[in-house]
Image 1 (cartoon, rainbow, N blue to C red):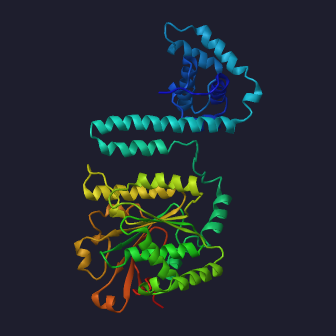
Image 2 (tube, helix red, strand yellow; image 1 turned 90 degrees about the horizontal axis):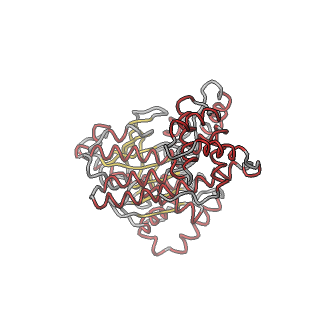
Image 3 (tube, helix red, strand yellow; image 1 turned 60 degrees about the vertical axis):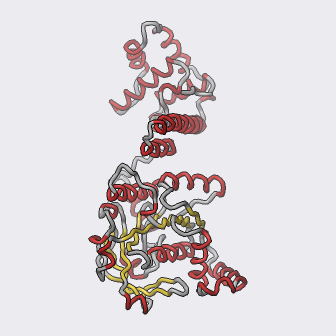
Length: 427
């Protein structure tokens, strides 16, 4: 593996801060491997510091470091060299140590590069062995390298901050659904770092709901990333055209000017609206890590950070061929919720029912295709139910299967305008 392309004093500064600043050490521990250092003395002192902190929860004194050096140095290494190097580290000019954030940024950048290089090398070996399923976790871990440290909240000492966050975030609905009664049951709506799932048989309206939710979130001021694994980007945009403007689908191509005027009117009435980015990936080719990489791209190239991610839909992601289908789907749901947490956003997706879902009049968790486990990590799950008679009348019933943060097991009467593709709660 390549070594640090940093000056000797920068490397000494990293060792000095590691043994002197607990906050610095906690941030660099997940990123730095001992062999990143050029000199063996730095490598071994860094290992001693980390091992001591992990065992005792505090930083070691120089005397302890030197005592441990006697134990770990090789027969060819002189103890006096280690002692002299530690003196050089302690005598560093303060000007080289007064910018801790700069050192942290250097470490982070190098660690990310090294982690990705190592992942690529190991992936090449896995390709030769045809162990393809092991490649994605390697790349995912490499992409996660970061010095961001979140140690959670202290229950008793953070009371005022927690109450303040509840007042700011929960009372004002940040992520409303399209159903007023569901928002009321959720005390305003969904929150960031949550996963919501729509359940329906093929052709009943799960993708249509997701498009309506995208429009709702956009008008509420959120940036939305709509990921389609089934429809083209233009087809998704065409659906949104009707939802926003109420122009019938068959009239859209004949009313291009009218469409633009209506969208301009919507913009003027919602000056704080967000934006919607639509991205299509080939069916069964994209993984959760594909989404993770794409999020990095749109942030770096277009400065687009989504508040809401909508994925249409779960079963069309690539699954691990080594797992049974129900296990693979549960794993996907877990990874999607992890993605929402990583990017501090709300994530919506949909899933198919099993064959029984076509036969029942009310879909519950019993009719979930292949895997009940995929709903365990969800914060909200509801089904779209429809008989043939209801379809003819443009009606449906949305049944709240699960709500982690509010009332569940109730029905929302639903209208579906199939001409304008608008889903709404029946008044």
